[in-house]
Length: 291
Image (cartoon, rainbow, N blue to C red; front, side):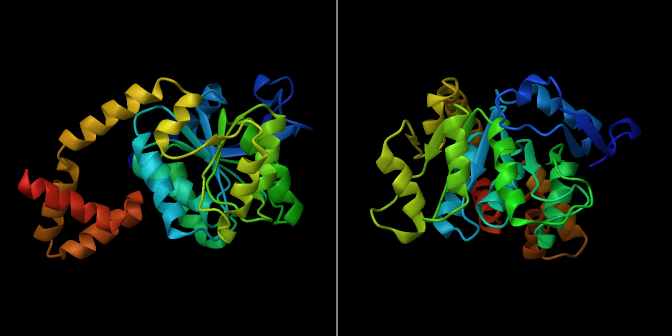
């Protein structure tokens, strides 16, 4: 991705005093450290109006990861900003799916801005920044991880969002803390239903049993309870996706083959760069061949 020198990646220390975005945040931090492209800082102006927080367990089922991928793909072009915490599991899946859908995404860290946790997400962090997203921390830049930091940063994840989606939560999942904050901060709360008694979804089940105003999340259209325009936007997006040919993908394949690379290596490299699953790329190629 080529950018001008005026849109390079920078790190800024920002004051939150009197900023309306933090009016609902309990004990708001006095300052934040934010990393991103110069143009990406404008995302704050769209929060919490366009913010969707996506959180859950660090050990998700494949079905939950798939639900995140499909749901965020349906939100392509809707203007939603995906917010999560760069942790393993659902957080990583949310950021990856946002990148694949072309949605801006913001990662709120549980450590200082100079750190990346978990370390294996350094590449994901770089892709978030390159795609015009932001990395945010309220902790001093060199701060290493501390268990309390992850709970503390949840209020910022919620504060940046108009709606919060609990994808998958066990009985003692940290996502339940995020859900509790969402209720206190008057954010719409969405919870994925599950088969009764499923141990990997006991946190979700307990939230829905309480019946305290949570919305069941079945698919992206469920979010229309918060953003009514999503009904028409998702349908339009679905039609455009069905009609469109993946010209950029086909051109990339043609160029790679001319260089002597195999189709699998071309698709694998694109998957690594964009976050699109290789299986999905293969389906795009097959559909295009018959259209």
